[in-house]
Length: 167
Image (cartoon, rainbow, N blue to C red; front, side):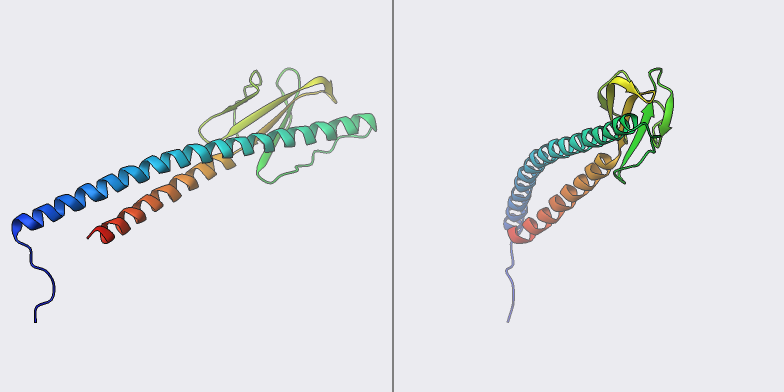
């Protein structure tokens, strides 16, 4: 007893053509959905990182003002393991810095380079000779790489599954 279906060359060509169109159109649809998802998630990640960096800068400013009001020496305390803080005077000289970046653009409020995002908060009046609080974050870069890998794996796995289902 023979198991399976034997196709002549024309039927085989038609099946392969159908599967190709089916998998290609499904992959295009998945890629469009993935791009939309990526853009939505990147916006959410950027908003979250921005809020975290602003919060960290405000906490440092609060600690600085508290030390000045109580006339006690300011002891730098990091409130986050992921964020690095830099304290600069009016001339841009580092008073305290745990930043990994080499050159900080104090003229901007926020910016990013290949691996880091920066939030610069200028004090309304210098406190303890500190004029700028700079917050550096590299979590956004790592989250972006993870998101790209997740989307790529999902598209690959979905394409393989659609190919089996179509066959």
